[in-house]
Amino acid sequence: MEASARVAKGNSNLIGIANTSLPQAIWDVNDPEIAKTYLLAPPLRSEYTNNEPWVREAATGIRKGAFSITNKCKNPEAMIRYADYLYSEEGSLFIHYGKEGGLWEYTPEKLMRYIMPEDGRTVEEYRSGVVTPDSGTWVPKWVRPETEGNWDDAFQQYRVRVLDEKLIPYIRQGLPQMYFTSEEQAQADMLLLDIQKYCDEMEAKFFVGDSDIEKDYAKFTQELKALGIDEMLALYQTAYQRWLDA
Picture 1 (tube, rainbow, N blue to C red):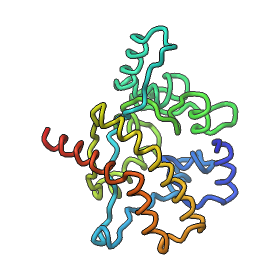
Picture 2: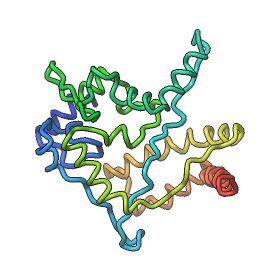
Picture 3: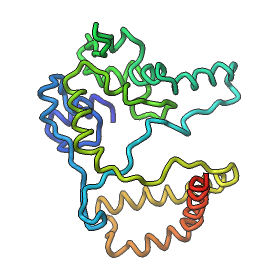
Picture 4: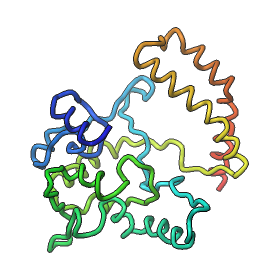
């Protein structure tokens, strides 16, 4: 769905809650004080978390598995240098927000502030439509906290403070970033091709009611086993043990 369609749905009160970083990505909100009224959903709790608030581990900001070079590339060395640059502090800012003077500029206090688009688009519409593919697209990068937090913007500062107060204390570490060997990766790719396709199909059926999750869950798990889910879990266990040993 294009950004304009999302904003149109948001402005028509057709979206009540959204998994997004900023209100203006869904709702047409440019005033920081109004943006603050779009509250952050609190950490969820259930019997599976011993009724304690729980948030999955925070992202490291490091994006892996996002870069490849084909035989059409005339200068692989230059592309490697470019990818390497995107993991630098300067490159992190560049891939996220573009060049200085385009969508943003520095204040005399060396804080960043937006330069509002002159064509009527919101900052997020302009960022995702003109400035960078880093909006819903898997790109190589290492986004540091400074990239998001060093803004002369009331809402950005509010956002960072709310995250620190309401989410960060409840983060629980899950699986670390792990790597497969070449042989393991080849096996995982083969297994995941069918497993992921089946999971996507069944997820849709469970959500819309074409399949009853209570009645059909046993059949669902049996099919996953037939597709090799146990072998897939064994690969992850091996990689995790290798990470622990290191």
